[in-house]
Length: 115
Ligand code: AMP
Image (cartoon, protein in one colour):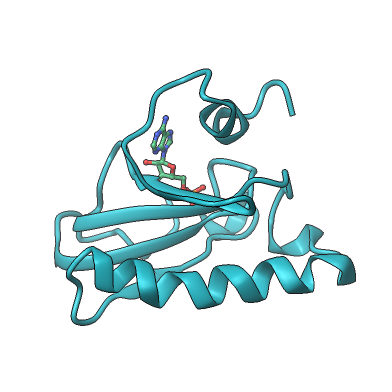
């Protein structure tokens, strides 16, 4: 999607501090971290949100679910929170599906609340 910021990161049109990439997904540090470690895992396929998933996306979502613990280990996280905001009322601000991985000390008290 041409006006999607995460699609632009995936295409390499705007920079991001990437920590992982394969054919299905990319992971990069959040530009405005809410925790000491705050990484976003983003499917390369543009999907607006969890509400827009199709049956055909099942394998992709399974791959992301399996990649998250490996990524967390690479990031040195013993434990972490995984968060997906869905819809404006659910706190979503970028409408390209993404999984937040949050580890270490939280930097914002409202990190898990809607804004
Ligand atoms: P959400 O509010 O769940 O849609 O999360 C969007 C996240 O994307 C926020 O935590 C933002 O800080 C983050 N974000 C926005 N623009 C960028 C960017 N250019 N690079 C990295 N993270 C970004």
